[in-house]
Amino acid sequence: GQQVMQIPQYQHVQEGEDFTTYCNSSTTLSNIQWYKQRPGGHPVFLIQLVKSGEVKKQKRLTFQFGEAKKNSSLHITATQTTDVGTYFCAPRGGGSYIPTFGRGTSLIVHP
Amino acid sequence: DARVTQTPRDKVTEMGQEVTMRCQPILGHNTVFWYRQTMMQGLELLAYFRNRAPLDDSGMPKDRFSAEMPDATLATLKIQPSEPRDSAVYFCASGLGLVGAGATDTQYFGPGTRLTVL
Image (cartoon, rainbow over all chains, first blue to last red; front, side, top):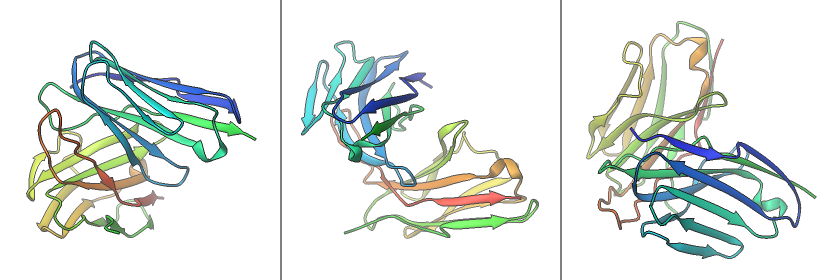
């Protein structure tokens, strides 16, 4: 299966600072999904990216899919304490239906 | 508001005991996933069903784990015998099973079963 690396593993920020997590694959992807898991909760779907170079925004969250469809990023502008949680990428590629979840990036926001 | 339900929410058992975890997927969903989450390994896919048929269980230890879908409204994950290293949160997720690169096939996760094996 494809190898997925998500960095950083942890990120501490002061409230109001920006945050970015990156997801890198060893193979070309057909699409990539992003999920958020609050502490003690379960993963919740955020978005799916399909096209090369695609950029999607959800309020303060910006999602990008690389031109080569091998990497993706999630950027949060002006973090808030409600952004606390672990953000997972779940790429899908090689004709496989099954996504491979990254290890996630845990975001800690200090008020 | 349709949700995936899982029971029990918490389970504490002793090593060697059988554990059964249950999941009710969202009505109308035809794919079911079982995941195990630990700090060390992250979110691992254990089994995947489509239309109640197991399509992938390569991530599941076959000697002690088994996953079934007796009907479209119930998926089960059994561990027999359980071991301390099985302690984890087990998530079930369901989806519509949409295929194709452009399809948004969201996985809807249940609240999880927190398993502790002593």
